[in-house]
Length: 120
Image (cartoon, rainbow, N blue to C red; front, side):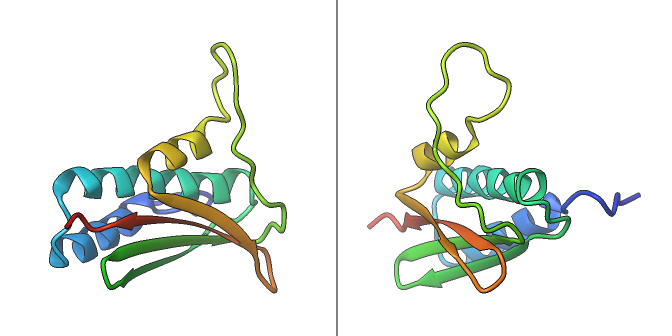
């Protein structure tokens, strides 16, 4: 049974994986992209107040760009946390898994995105 109050990570991850496999990305890079995508979707749901975030997957030349949109106009910050905090490390994880990431305000809400380059 699908809970209407949580985003479908499975559908988004399957679509991302399928696009990356078709274009020849290595399995390790696919796993990194799936984890980064999950973090952005959960952030959009938890912090952006969006039950069904918009996910856009683009492969432009040799670069994968994944964007997740939510209804909040608050831009995220990559926080440095000490100790054993249970949350707040999601964007640090995205930063470590991807080549680039960022965010931008839209007419309604914002997009948070990351990019991964295809290995030569």
